Amino acid sequence: VMIEQIPADEIRKHPGGGLAKELYLVHSVPTQGLKAVKENLESHLHYLQDLERKGLLFAAGPLFTDNGQNFQGDGLIILNTNSFAEAEKIAAADPLHQSKARHYTIQSWLLNEGSLNLKLTFNTREIKLQ
Image (tube, rainbow, N blue to C red):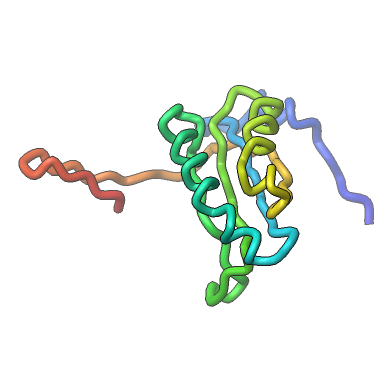
């Protein structure tokens, strides 16, 4: 079966009135089992925290199996960069990828719809994600 394709620039030009914010999804998959992932996890988390401080990390976290009951070592990182090339450079520098504990693929994603709800309580200075 041949898969039909449309040039991505056609979609970018006509996002249908949505946000049209291009982000980059990094799907990270273990290559050597969970032991190698665990051995490099601390440095990976520090790396993500640094990206977050720099405003380059939109979101990240572990992916669970289809039934949500188990973890096999996969992760998803969503980068807020200016280009695919910049996302590639950042993904390649991740300690889990440099150590070869995981390999990755990157896809461009055009964020159009959705919402994020925050509750800010002034008196207690609390911010809650709802």
